[in-house]
Image (cartoon, rainbow, N blue to C red; front, side, top):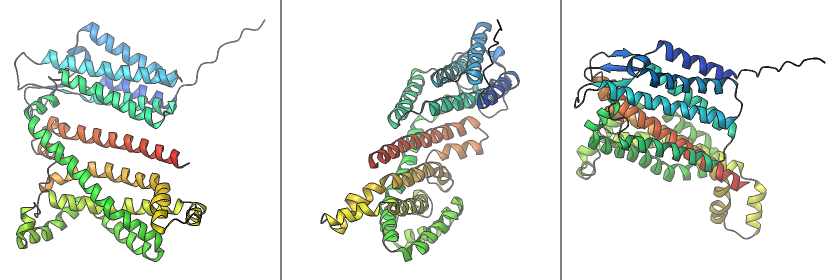
Length: 389
């Protein structure tokens, strides 16, 4: 009787890459950076230097479990669970390191996550993303995943788990200003988007109905899109400054050569092309039979447009709005250079002061906002596309 030797499961290529990167981070990169104040060069510390032996062993065991799942486990739920376990353990280990290295009552010492932590979080995040992709969740479940993760992160921050980490120290110093700049960031991103929808949607409809205008209009908007953001901000400063000087009402409304006005106008101009172009593309996708059937039922041109064409084109139009919103959330960062405010003020102030923790205070929420907007609008597009079918 012949013996059968079980075949080894083929290694997952992405899992192998992530496991190697994670192992390299644990062995060769610092786990945290200890600084006596916010601007001096830091002292790198390894995992075994900042945690008790049992805690470091537990952290390494959890990461080994995640690496094993990444290498040879095909079950998406197991991969996701291992990734989330790894993220949780790494986050708690960093928080514990901050608590251990910060003297009681000391407000000057800074403990920042090291390169090893960031590499581990990126690897575990990619593993979680791959697992969720394999699970093929519907739009509702994707939004639920985002809500649960956001709630868990919010509870941990509110509980004070990470209060001794450098980014949270910067937040404690700038809490009131942070809330004000976050509101300004959202106002610029959402306000310019709303204005662009009001203008670009009719432009797209007009380009669809009058094809000879399409090339010229979309070509002009495309030229605007190619201008670098900081250059466009600079170009707008002169005319808006002249307008504020010539029209006192404009100055009273906040329209000036520097500040939020040129930022809002630039973001508005950048937003026109994706929405207008996607409106044209969405209307072109509407089946002619549906339009003819609506007209055969006695519907007016306005009723056909609003009740049939725009409704069927809505998923494509929403895709353009999603592109614009994510783009605007990122580009508002640059507006801080001309006094536009927003979270970018922390980024550029941190760069000027060589304070990486202040940079992260602005950069991390920007990334989180852009990612959340993309997930929510992607889910909405998918829901609308399913309804269309």
